[in-house]
Length: 122
Image (cartoon, rainbow, N blue to C red; front, side, top):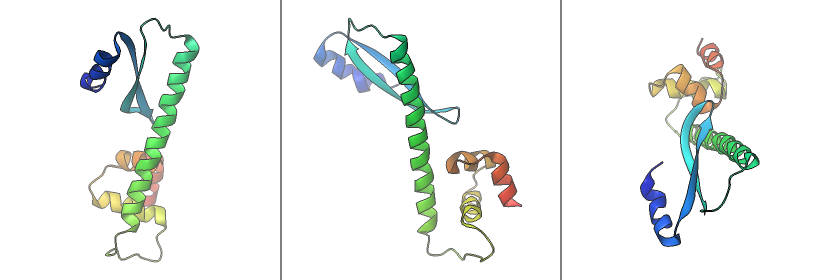
């Protein structure tokens, strides 16, 4: 995590502890968050469990936002000629293939397994 983000807060508020945690989505670190606490605060196992859960929840939320953004970009393209025999998921996947994305990247973006992406491309 970029130290400059929280360093000014430490300077303003005196000595504090900084605890940071990664934001994980589908096993991949996609960000981080941090808390500033009083210097004498002792982090308990339940605090760490809470941070772990929050990390997972934020990962799911961010992955969902990414999926919604990709879907809305796809749906707003007026130039697409939609064949009647393809489903919306297949069209989303084809749009991402057109952008040069790998099957793994497409699966991550849309929240599907890689095998689902491969199957829809057949």
